Amino acid sequence: MRGIRSGILNLSLKDADELYACYMPFVENGGLFIPSRKQFSIGDEVFVLLELMEEDDKLPLTGKVIWVTPKGTAGNRK
Image 1: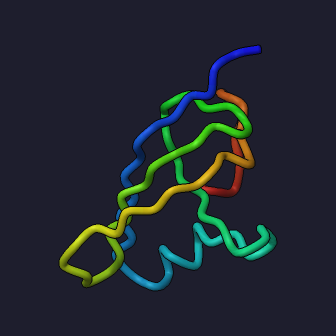
Image 2: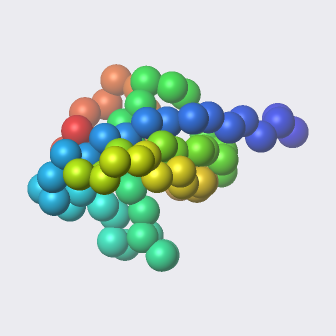
């Protein structure tokens, strides 16, 4: 059994369009798609610093990876 990995991700959303583009409403309690070059596995814990539109401070969030797009595959997400 492998150990649980964690990571820190930064996400900057400049406007409502960017927020809607990464929001995943089908995830229970909501979720965000966060593109990253870091490698994660399903279940990994993540810490996110979210810069939301015109807020002065970054919002700290914790979460869990529920979706991984395999390297080299294209999708409709950013």
